[in-house]
Length: 222
Image (tube, rainbow, N blue to C red; front, side, top):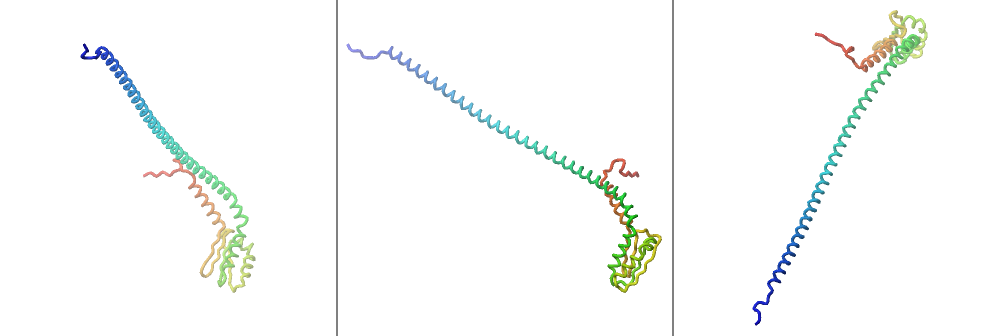
């Protein structure tokens, strides 16, 4: 008698269980690989994000340091400029003081030693430039007229013009003073006035250069 079913169900159950176990094992491996791959991808993304953040932070830090350096440089330049200005002002102050002291010492000596000669020289230049003038009236100090009258006359004769000239003394004039007058003009020379003008200009320059302190500033009260 032949069997109706030629099958070994026990064997099939065993084989089916093995296949299912193998399938489950394969699925577990695939799941583990997937988890590892996702983990690696997440790590890579996090690493790149960290690098970007680090680069941004480094760039921001560099920009801040550059700005700080520029600010420090600008402050140093401003301090240097202010220091240079103060130094220049101090040098100008010392120079003006030196020139003023020198002029105050030398000018009186120049006036005393050369005043008569300079007055005569001014008169001679005026006579030389007064061509075509019919009359010249020259006024000098008593000492100049006494000591340099011939020199003035010689300057008049050298022009060769038909010119009348009168020379007179004025006791109020200093030895460095001379006045020359003609029909439409005049010349007034004073060595003392020239030197005094220079000294006054230097003193005013000194006053402008000297910084004012509370004790030197003028105070007005109502």
